[in-house]
Image (cartoon, rainbow, N blue to C red):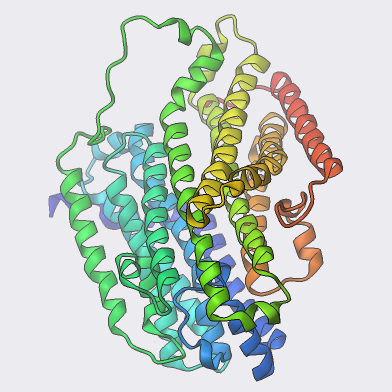
Length: 532
């Protein structure tokens, strides 16, 4: 038990340290669930309205975010909630769990705080145990609030409990996956990237499995994203799929602790290679230094976006099958097969843009970490100006994120071309992705603005991004009011290939990004460095 000495004290410390962060996540997800139920009940009141909604969930977009499609033949309120809400909630729980576990494991080692704590009376396994325990506690509370929200709206208690239990167990599973990834990389950003990639691959298994066959096929069962919905809540409840979660969690916990015992503190299983004794000609500038520091992240994120976009692009072939099997669905939606294809790929392009935007913001925020750690001060003690230093970091972020966006569109168009043997999709989808580039640059500009003027408020950038993500996903599922869609950042530009390209909004957003970045650079030059 010496390995776990101090675990409970560390759990209390994490709860105290993250009390605001965890409360915000809990209240936001719990309140969203509580508010969404009556809103959806008011929006779809008659059986005819519900069945029309069920037909939408049979579209490729509906399957991507709706799951296997149990109960679509008798689409009640409970079935609608069990179909349309879990994917959005699970995405949020995955992000929360990954960030929480990395923050209290790998990031603590990288900063040196873990070594200081272990120098006192603290067991070698206490930190990871505390991180996983607090993550499990947060997911359990959120899952309980979701179940209570369903019960409070007069839905079946057993099915409501199954809903909440599935969400909580899936979130704990995502945290366990992150704990394993945290043993591989010696850097927190590498651990986070690896965890997001692993979770993304599992999401893709779920999508492919659910697209292949209604009710899910074999690939779905390899993904924890699917097991909660496989309980068939509010349709034909069965509890046994939830038993898969504890089995996988136990295995992942065992693997994480075993790997942690085989490496040195602060090191990863994949060791960093020693660099050359002298810097090469490509490392003679601040830009080259930033590019070198982010090389691994850029490669991993770009490869992940390319592969996911290529895979999702091939799903366009399912639209042709859907038209053949259910032509009345297309007629009822007032769309042609080509319009549906354009809309489907346009929606997927937007998620490529969101992913590239998330990378861009994280990339720019590395400058904040360099500043607070004192490394920026050392760099600028040489003949390096502040604008040059931060500008180089911004330029690397902008070039990398732009490349990811365009390559993502290219890959998606290529996947659609392979599936349909119509390679005209390559140019169409690549152009659709390129038309969204100002949005990526706008978030970069806003991040630079806050870093230069008000670093403590940089979280507002994430708040707007999160709002845009939620509105984009829930807007498709729930049908939000136009004013809520209009204030989303991802509604600022026309969505190609459905809409026509608009040069005025394109240039306006691009100009706003440039102005924000310029003001941020000037502000950074004039303020004091915040070195811890």
